[in-house]
Length: 451
Image (cartoon, rainbow, N blue to C red; front, side, top):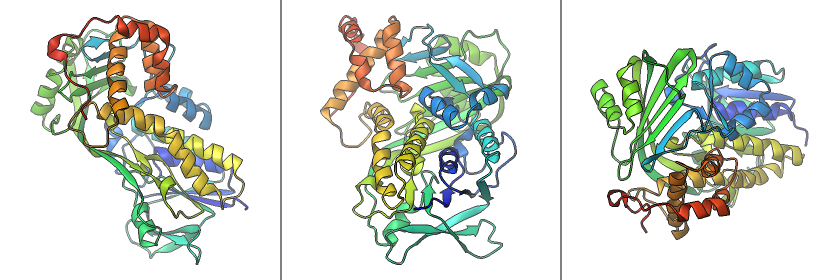
């Protein structure tokens, strides 16, 4: 089948990556976005999470650089910060601070608005990509027998004109967690989309700061409080000589929305080096709150009926707890799967099911890494497996070993950056090291998992 026209619903991270992939395979690619996109690193209304800290996972950075050659250098030229995830990252969890040593895994930190803007600039140079901003999709168009999606119906957000159809050979839903595709498919007779959902009731509060103290010897600082606390603080240097402090809590705890609440939460974090930094920090801008009710996975690959000419990726398919910073990486992995499937499947009639199955396998690793961490909190309701409990406990041992062992540190980071699976942590050297760890103090001996 000739690959003439493709439509992408959503101009966020997943949509931008999908459009770049599609431009190599289709004569024309149209991005449909509800927001009017700014010409600069400015937050857009549809990206409320943009002001939170966004360190890019190494796997995400690698994929983005392949899709957008030169993007890393471009971001650095516009002030983004790059840091070795071992030597320039202070990482405190399970009561210990990870060893500070180079591991050769560079983390790129850029504001979400800067990242999206530079990606849009790269896409604007691609001749067969066009933009329709200020439009929302209201429904799908299908063939008479509903076996294939043939386009969408759009409406301008200001309702200045009437609904109009846009036809395409492939429609890609990258509209995010709030995707209306499940309702559209069910109303059209395709049945309900199977869903896995883990309620986490997560709250994230961020604020930008200027720092006026002695220059720190780190660029990122992560503090994960000991259980049963769900508190996390992530501090990152960003463009313009600023810092972003993002505070996380879940399961009923919250960083709060007022200055007093935000400051009290920050002062509850354990590292003296952070408290020293905080005394020299001047807030700029307002506190930004973002809430995530659950980790959510829509299993389009399990549907008995699924139309040809349709693909779903990014948060529209798999939305993770932002606490673990895996969302952009999961979207990038999905774009990579889209690229591979299109290259190998010239017939779009068989593409959709194959892609959704491949996507499901591709996002298994970020989903497992994220939800396994969620499940260490007894308050997270969902189906647990006894193996998850063992892996969670072993993961804590590896993290404690990483306070003194560079090999364990690199293995842990390779898993967290989605470069390798958890099996890398069972190398004999790491396994032996965990067996010789001293027992944790009794006050920290809490079950990481419960049946």
